[in-house]
Amino acid sequence: MSGEENIRLQKFLAQAGIASRRHAETMIVEGRVEVDGVVVTELGTRIDPRTSRVKVNGRAVGKTSERVTVILNKPAGVLSTMKDPEGRRTVRDIVESEPFRMVPIGRLDFASEGALLLTTDGELAHHLMHPSYKAPKVYVVKVGGQPSDAKLDQLRKGVRLEDGRTRPAVIDVVKQDETHTWLEFVLTEGKNRQIRRMCDAIGHRAFRVYRTEFAGVSVDGLRPGQFRYLTAAELARLYETVSLSEIVPPLSARAIELGGKPEGAAERRKGILPGESRSEHRMETKPRAGGGRPNTRRKARAQPKDEAAKPGRSSKGRAPPRSKGGPKPTETGPRKPVGVKPSDYRKQRGPGSR
Image 1: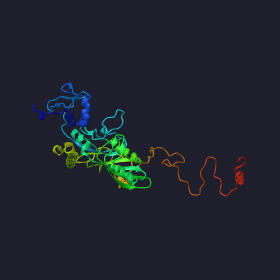
Image 2: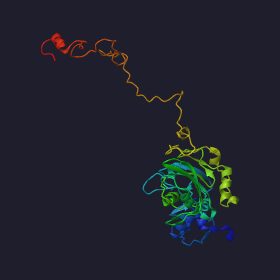
Image 3: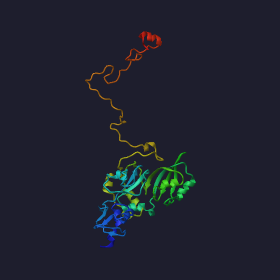
Image 4: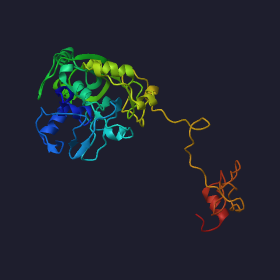
């Protein structure tokens, strides 16, 4: 068998959608991968994808039949992982209805929102996350106060963080008022909580981070919690961005079936974004049959038709209206006449009246 027919084990795992190539290498070194019943820990191992039997954590792995990619509008409060030991909500909970084992490409931190790509193509995921390909990510960020031009220039040139200096970035002011400023960031790297740490480094806390695009794929038309399959044109541009234009997959049957329509339950966003009207932000609701607003009033309990009306009550269970100018009926006697002195009124009612 020629060596050209064999591929590296980590590449096979990536193509099977098990993990990115980098994560697959870690799994191999940790001894979690078997090939034909033998644990493999050497990264240079090659296998025949047609005949080799591969297991990860004791479970058999087969090469995926379709390579698919979706764009998700991740809500705040959702983890960008497929499993959480603490039982918190993850992106897997949103896409679990789909017939593919997709993994997220990179991460958005727990409190951040917006564009997140998920795919079954580990090779694509590896290239998009690798810093050498400089896949652009666009964010709108709400920070406290009004950063000076000098501080914005620091962000543009790069600031020093605990894990190294950030790359030069494109930073523009989108909107500003007395208490907050909206900035647009364009980054070509993905350090952990990078934008929040960059803003902390210049003394302006990031209160909201929303990613609008990832590698040219936008979340326009998606509410939080919704996702859609990429179009053929988007797939071609995405693979070309990371020099994989020769292996662009065809559209899956599922993508053709949905025709680019959003899937998933729409959720309400945290607030209005710059350039967005309040009506655009308001979550769409299902119209009521027959039109009009839904009746939220509590319905009155119906009475049996043969039930006699109680004394002093109408047939509908309500007290009858008083006639204008008439006294209000009470259990203790007639109402005190208007214009009569208290002493005269007591005389009329007899001794002992108060």
